[in-house]
Amino acid sequence: MAANLPTRFDDMDVVHSLAYGPEPSQKLDIYIPADAIDKKLDVIVFFYGGRWTYGAKADYRFVGAAFAEKDFIVVIPDYRKYPQVRFPVFVEDGAKALAWVYDNIATYHGNPERIHVAGHSAGAHIGALLAADAHYLGNEGKNRSLVIHDFAGLAGPYAFTPGEPDLEDMFGPPKNYPDMRVTTFVDGKQPPMLLLYGDADTTVKYANIDKLKQRIKKSGGCVQTKIYHDVDHIGLLGALSWFNPQGASVGQDLSKFYNSSTQKRSDLMCTQVKK
Image (tube, rainbow, N blue to C red; front, side, top):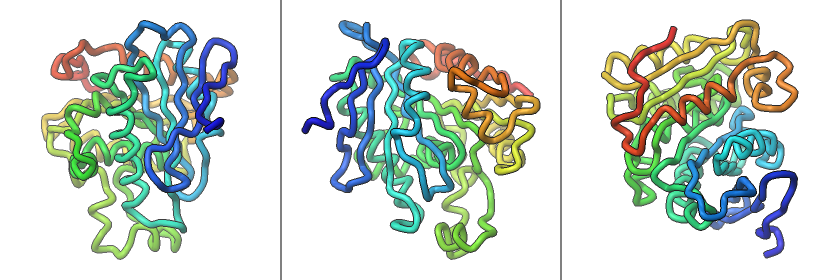
């Protein structure tokens, strides 16, 4: 139980390793601005990347700190990974985490009506699938349109074809590949999306961002994109740290996107696509 007690550092509180499910990896951390008492703050649920095989929520304290400083409640879940599990288990874990946040975040001064989903790399893939394919949250007894206010992805592989043995095993057989592509499920009903990318990225191809953007536009959905010059795959995420070695305005752009909405999702101002 001690792991669940708030840990105070600087101007935020952190609640560590709350269980959102029965599995050892189904734990999450919550970052809470120190002055959140008597407030009802917007919530960011951030899924980290790591090729769906590695990573830990403790490594992303800087993400929690960056947005807690901007008056957001930040939730960072762990999830099961390959080779322990294969697709779609890590996405199902993401849905279970989101359902837990929706049901419980008010206890931690968060507003369940304003949950922003975000992710980097493999985490952006998980978050985007949760936003695009309503069945994941449906299996948790939740309505996607009520749970996810919007989605912001950093360098997500939204439309790729596995071409390496571990990825083929993770997502295969090939007949299942359409189910792991976000573009398969875009129908204009998904929440607004912000897609960010660095043009020096050699890990995730820009085609993933462009294909998803074009599919959303064709479906009549809501999308913004922004490309950062001379920013690579890690630099895009690193921009959320105080160090920000490549100087990208990722944190500011995410905050602007999250704050560009009123209480009603239909009023969210993201109809203009940025090229």
